[in-house]
Image (cartoon, rainbow, N blue to C red; front, top):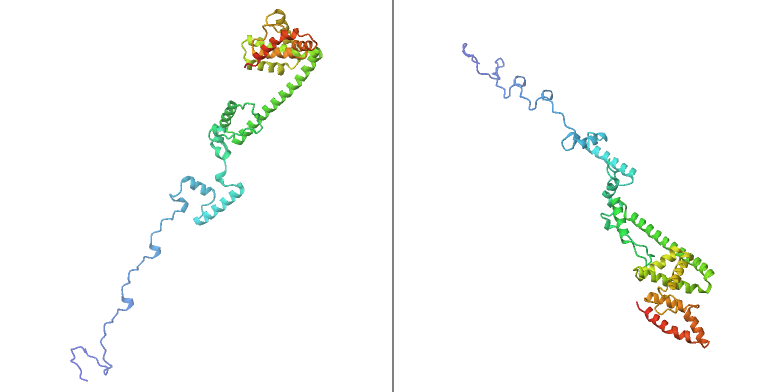
Length: 333
């Protein structure tokens, strides 16, 4: 192999000349150790700034301070809100089981200083208290006597009082029922007392007046009617007075007094209470009373009939016009 020029570097290399140094080819890729390090895509964790602390779910602005206080007091401030909801559901179920009712159906006690009646009316829907006094539904006793008036004014007043003090509809019904029962009992007692007093009175009068009892009672009634009329009392007032004497007098003394008055009137000639008087009986009530006297077993007209049956008709003829006039007058209203 020809040697190159001495002053020229050898630039050719052949495999047949192992002594030669082959030229170094430039590497396709620089060695790894000689390459510059690529910048990391993400900085190391140690070099990142710390994340701000996360806010707990109960500390956010979605809850009010009162709600947050309640949650904290109930021990529901756990990390997992689902766990808190589960605990809350268990607490609700336990509360309803203990109360045996839905909390919405429970009543709260009156507030400090609140009027109890006001509190009752405020909860009227749950307690059966109507909104107004007129809204009470009251049933009258089925056995209430038709001839006995119902106290409408008293019932209206009871309604007002019941609503004022928060009494329920059933409560007022019981009160009115009790009042009606008491009134009926008083009426029955009064009637029984009157019947007993009347029996005692008739027994006393019959023991004293004998067979003239009916006639004397009739004369006493007539005298009472005449005096009542002069006092300006009408027929209803006279009837009430007779009933009052019977019920409140209850003995023979009242009728003895009236019979004595009748006798005094007849003796003075003020009004003819005897059957022979020509001007007796100026009103229908007086006429009826006088007819009762005359037709009594011991009355003058009855005696005149007896005499006529025995052949003496003079007294009957004298009294017949009187009886006819009284009968016509008594038939008037």
